[in-house]
Image (cartoon, rainbow, N blue to C red; front, side):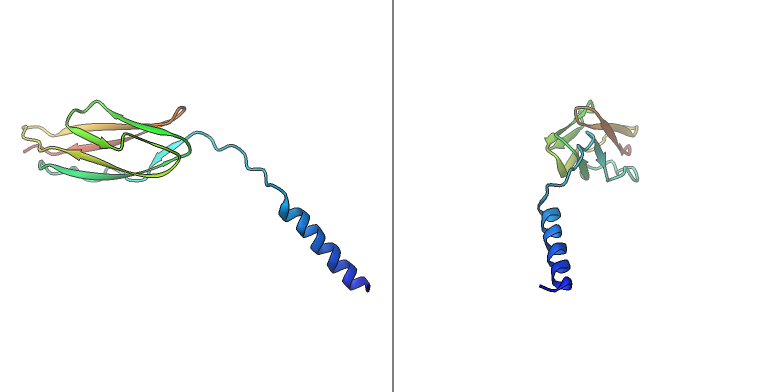
Length: 117
């Protein structure tokens, strides 16, 4: 076997050893983020707002606004689409809902503003 062949064989063997090793991937910090920003206030009419969630672990959503429904209210690691449904605002003042998306260690909020009638 020539020197060139031995060198090529050794390089391929080394590449095979490296390629078959399990790479160390550090644990990802527990986090959640909302990619959809609040934007303009919504009209007084009933409607929906889509929100995209990026989470590194299980998450849940909560709000104390009784005029907003969140679906789904929980999810798992990855990218999730969440729908916020809201009824007509027949009042004379705008209203604001804060939706909190949280994991075990972190949280992020989304604010939904609906105009008055």
